[in-house]
Image (cartoon, rainbow, N blue to C red; front, side, top):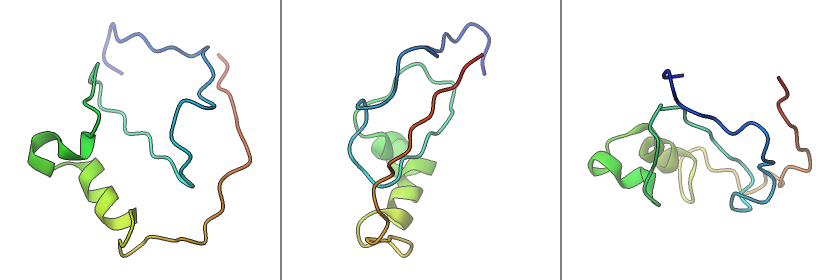
Length: 76
């Protein structure tokens, strides 16, 4: 991680993201993102590529993946 980047490791993530079957965390070191990160840099980025492959209609989209029922926390 970049020096000086504060990361909140105490606030639970449960309920803070949309109810999708899969979530991807991309570590960029960037402090703030727009609401549609797949549109950053004209759509030429990892988030856009993943959405194209895994999103609705994508080659690797799997509509049979159930929503996860497990949650975990990271403790230091």
